[in-house]
Length: 308
Length: 258
Image 1 (cartoon, each protein chain N blue to C red):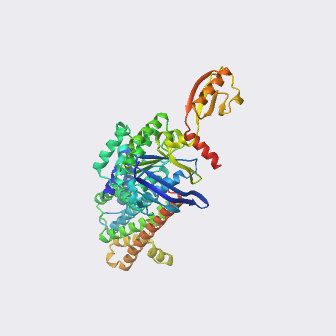
Image 2 (cartoon, rainbow over the protein chains, first blue to last red):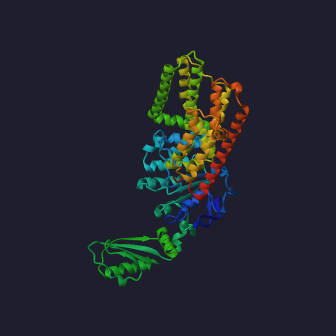
Image 3 (cartoon, chains in turn orange, purple):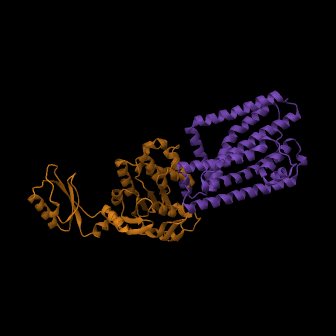
């Protein structure tokens, strides 16, 4: 990671009495994927729209590289690409190539550049064979890819993806992950929002948690597991096995008798052996054991509890 | 120019994909002109000077109606469609000034329809052997009228961006603007005088009719100057309202809502 491509300084937005964003200070560096998470209405989309000039902030400032964005300026948009949530970001009555030529033309790109970039991006997103297909007849996943290609056409430094996996099936979501990994580069940062925490932890290198317009956590994804002194051991017992005597397990954190899944907090490998031994003493048959590090889901749940 | 080519290509692509819709447009315009032809043929003889004046008025009235409709439609309705389909924010993200893009769209579509309409209008004149009295002044007045109309279209588009649903406002405006193209408005009463002075579309249409009747020599040039100033004021006012509404919509975070 290197150069700071986007930074916000005390960014704030109010809609009447409602505070949508309050003192947001974010730095997004090149060659990174920054994940923005938070519940509905937390302020993620407002943040993106403020950065894109689609919503005018009430306070604070936004810097692209070292330059502060002045309101009304459109020049900085050449460094920005965005796929916005829930929108049709492309014309469904046009083919993929027609969309690319249209948006490329509006961005002032030459035909030669549009052709070259289209070929590269269609290949990257595996859409070359569909280039002459009207977007309205593509699957949701493909339409989302076309939106991303349109947003990447002018090689922006900052790419915003607001809920890119919304409505996508597993395969399309997987393809989206791969695409994000491939497009992030030394001079690009991707800022992505999603409610799919697994998706975020898989693709993001940095994380910002927003709740009620405020940042409640900021850090790199890799260090999340270091936030806790324990990891989780998930033990699934066989359906025929008798239920364990819960009182015997002081480190039990959650359990579901119906599915036979028990989760324990463990701090060392000794804890694992002790657990298995106690289970054997109680004649409990174990179907499988999984060790899971402290993860984004745990952090998110913890932060939400703290925030209540 | 680049923007014009980009927009023209998009328009051609849309025609290609929805050729049936374009074909029905063509049929409607053709039917209008056939009706006009039958009407002219049945009521006027080719050697009459009155026929030339009346037919010219009919045709120019039709053209004015046509271009005003396109202006209003491609500004306000076009924007509304963008907001409903969700591409409006993407357009804002391209860095192209929206007001400029809208003007180019209007220009492209005007040319597109002019390619159909003008040959048909010419054909009527050739077939009926009734010449039109169009002259340079008619063209100048027509352009002034169009500038004023674009100003009103910007105003309407701005209100659409800010308030989303403007109800029957476009319809009310078209009635106000199109009325004088279909009937003669005098300058006898105070209201008529005020309308002719402050609404460029009404004043211009009245003067256009005068040029068609061959009365160009008696044209009130002060009135032409007033129309020119009015049209420019309407255009500036429309643009200012449009930009204020766009900014206001961004402040409220409702740019893409509909």
